[in-house]
Image (cartoon, rainbow, N blue to C red; front, side):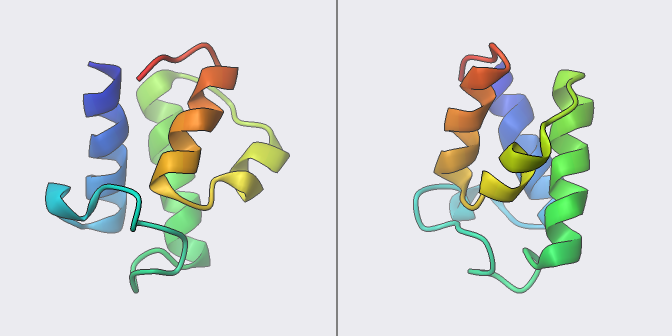
Length: 78
């Protein structure tokens, strides 16, 4: 369920398909994931899990996989 919400945040905010989700998805690896797309993504993740991410975590979320690690800090298991 949490992984589904996490994936949905990526697919909707970056307007991508599920097949792009994975280790190869990193910041600026696709056109949509620029600085504006990043903030849209962060907002989608925060809304999906009802959290407020720390600034350092927002900056550190540089890839799909890294984001899953960061979610553990907020006690969200994937």
